Image (cartoon, rainbow, N blue to C red; front, side):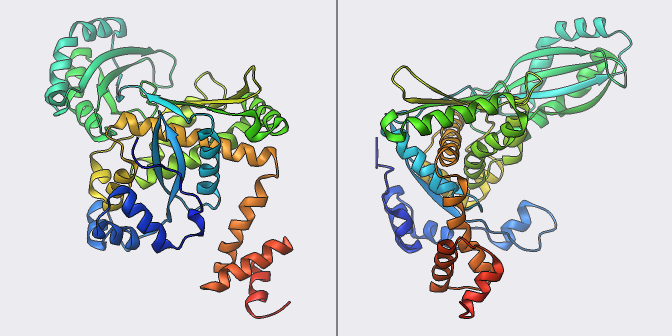
Length: 418
């Protein structure tokens, strides 16, 4: 199982003490600890990763503790600016841990490449010719990348006919491509570009789009958990189920409900330099797959009165390639996680999303979201007012006690006004 993910009182430790704990637990080198301290990204490397660089923008990198997933302990690196997310996630993971932890799994890393064909004179005949040319399309697709040499590459092809569009009928060719341990956007786009001229020749039409789809619904990840009745109490469980019921029928609530899950998922995606925008796009599209936007999670009670939760969503993430490989801190985050495949990472992220959703629902169902959140927010307000060092906690604690968390009050406290 490896080292335990239970890190009691981590929030009370200094940054240096936390770094020492993670260094020892995850066998980090001193250079890696230094990279964590300074962000790990030089201005020169940043300039090579994106265009028009003028500087770097930092986000806090924290560790969510207490996670046990598929009988293995994980420390979860999370890059996020929002207070209370990491604390809520860790608390929820501890509740689930008491009932045996999370179970999680993920589909093979199958991405969809789309090639759009318009202006075909005979759509039916064009689709018949595409089906007949399947082997030639496969051969060209797999010659365009090295994925097939690693056990991946193009696996199947689907042909879609869409008649009712503003530009007339069109054919959309879906190439199903196994991207192995990469997120796969670059590989899929390369294959689509390579195959497009052949598709155009076969159909006699005109290819417009040739790019991956971020609705990676062939690449779903799932997680499940139980929280024992005694750990939460009947009233909170009943309120969590009621909140879930609203998210199942009301898109206004579902959007916020799903945002809670994505708070956790996005933070892991950012920490590992995965495409969190693609994750968000796919998750929201999947939530609306039947024409109505709904919750990505389910929460209910079992016969014993325990709380049972699950989540399912597309998670196109990877552990190699692109910025994930190029960014030093992303590599450290992956080392802390200890995942060995893209499928394992997807399963872990699904569990984190379920935990974060539980943390938010538990707070909403009991003391309300503001009590814990505003106590942490008070620190940000104190810093914005100019507090430093020990002043931050003093000003934040006073404002929290007064239930008066405002910038003007923070400035008064800094200047000794009562």
